[in-house]
Length: 198
Image (cartoon, rainbow, N blue to C red):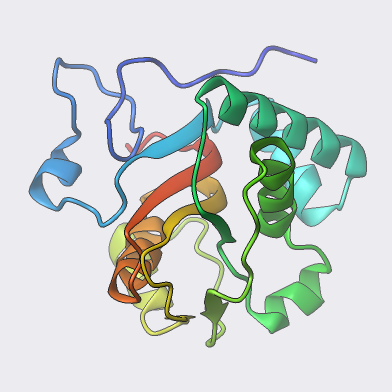
């Protein structure tokens, strides 16, 4: 297996965006601080990871799925990841029927095995179908997911929101804000890959 590209040490302390300068935060997190406190993200989203995730998500390749889960678990152990509950970014039922596989739930369960933190699928629900976000601008992503999710009360829990790929942080920002409003004490992001913004 070709070496995967890990994120550099010098990255935004909130969203894990790789940085060139000496700042601890990216420009967006300084101008618009997200509701989530920090992100634990393992890799750059580039070859061969993009290929493996594509096979994992769209072809249900169990070899890729198991291998990626092991890499995710290793990253979480390295960073001593901890929370009260793991919340996977939910899929709408129409998308689940079409794809037949929920990659964020798979990653959440892998995270649970290594951190011993329970997975909670009852906290977030996707109540409106939205188009695929791949290729959309940040503004179009925000419009696409507006009103698409609902959060149940979570009274004082420290939550880990699990996603496969973080691109513009639009989904992470939207869902973490929902969770804080629902009563979460804190939200952090656990993800497999980060797409550098251009």
